[in-house]
Image 1 (spheres, rainbow, N blue to C red):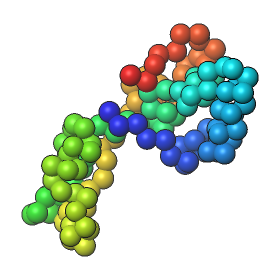
Image 2 (image 1 turned 135 degrees about the horizontal axis):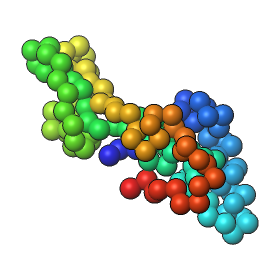
Image 3 (image 1 turned 120 degrees about the vertical axis):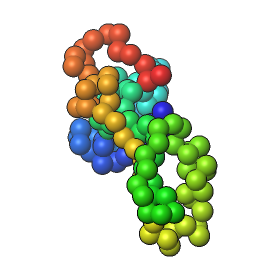
Length: 125
C-alpha cells in the first residue's frame, strides 16, 4: 500500500516538516535511530498510516462514460493501467480520479497508537 505523509496530516498532530528534520538530525548526531519511522514511534504516531488516519488502497475514477468506478490495488499501477496521468486526459472532466482510502486498521483511524509508551510498536510493513 502506498504511504503518504502530508504536511496537513503531520500538522494535525502538531508537527512540521522542519521540526521533523531537526528532530532527525539531533537523533542522528546523538547516534540514535533517526529514520522517519523512528520519529513516528518516538512521538506515538501510527507507523502504518504515518499519522494520516487512512491508507491508500486503490483509486476512484470516472470511465469514458462518466461512470464512477473504484478499484483496489497498487495505486500507481492502476494510474498507469488507465492512463490517468496522461496530460490529454487532464482537460477531460470525465477522466478525473483520486485515491481510494480506507481507515487505518492499526490505529483505528486516529493516527496514534493506543499506548505510545508500548515498547513493541508494529512496523509499517
